[in-house]
Amino acid sequence: MVWVLLLVIAAIVLGIVGAVVHGLFYLLVIGVVVFVAAMALAAARFRRTGRRPVR
Image (tube, rainbow, N blue to C red):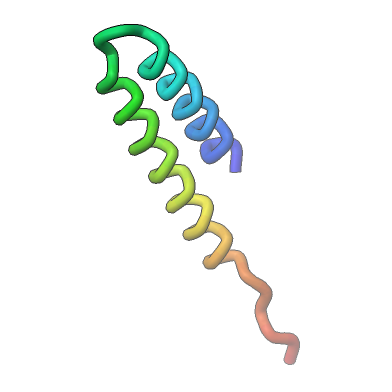
């Protein structure tokens, strides 16, 4: 789960820099891609570690 948090923080930083600095719009796009990847990773981990039925 630490990796997901680090990816989200990196996405936020890249998004802020891409939005504020003129001419670095591609950083905003990279930040969005990293954020989507982090959400996909979190969803995959949550789905895999779901509750198992009690026998």
